[in-house]
Image 1 (cartoon, helix red, strand yellow):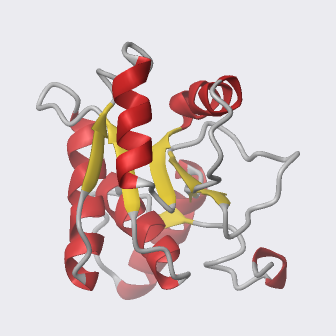
Image 2: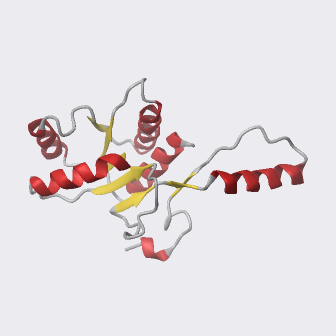
Length: 170
């Protein structure tokens, strides 16, 4: 999976939509490879647009509500990038604490499409093509070119943005 590319793509979609204060909820740790990739993609997008980093370590999330609330009040993020598993905790925290702001939410590596939701400017997630579909497409391409296939990279995809569906634009 091109995890860094997914984080970069997700951050860039929000930035291009006018959001300038993007927070990353992640555990940036050498022990968790995905978090390093999320951070690298997030950092690359922010650097490209000259925006400041706003990072909340997931190690602290929900363990100390006053610190979390202080972060949210002081930084007031317009968009938050997070892993799928943290979305429901964040949503519950927002409701329990009557959090008045409604930042956009972008999620990495969702295990499924949120079929009950539509991708929108305030709620979107990264998808990846299936391994078998990518393998077949790349194998056919390499056969046509007469080259050897050594590896397969699954690239990020955001429904409604990358396929230019108009329903995303509301």
